[in-house]
Length: 255
Image (cartoon, rainbow, N blue to C red; front, side, top):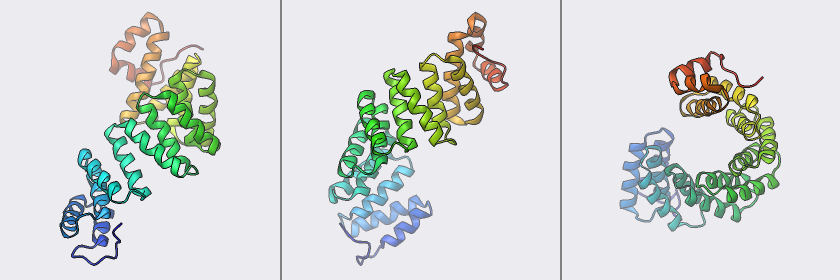
């Protein structure tokens, strides 16, 4: 591994300062010069990968993260970076394998096992996700993210009771996390407690923004379409009207 103190026309401190200032074009310019001056500088590849990822140039980011790992395969930071790039690219199966490798090397780091569980879910490997999430919960039962991951994968496998138990713990451990509350609503839905699920989705749709709001609104709409009778199905067909009525709190399911 090349050290930051090595003499060179371009210093790692310059690169770090540019990266900390979100000057990603400067990072790319400086690291290009570094690699021309001393090919095989793993730190240059690392910073280049991070700036490329921040700039949305994911294929290039993956290549430089792979180079950093190749040059120093024992550097945990590089392997974690590679897993993050793969996850951002949507290569969830490969990302899960990287997080699993990290977790095997240091089983005390619960966050890597949690990350593996979430990537298994994204890779449509829910059974493997359950196994990883259970390992994370066993390592630290008070870890809210571990309980949340367990709930999410158990919903996917159809285990209503297990999902509800894990989601309740996640919501208690992460009281300010809307994703934990969404997981609890999903568990209510799976357990056929549709009134509680719909009420939670309705509340969350008013608290969240962007893609998160769209996701929970779509869940509320699907639930309403299933349980609100023919008039409700007609209303749910018109997205803007449904969203308006939902936001006003006019819609209910059950008691």
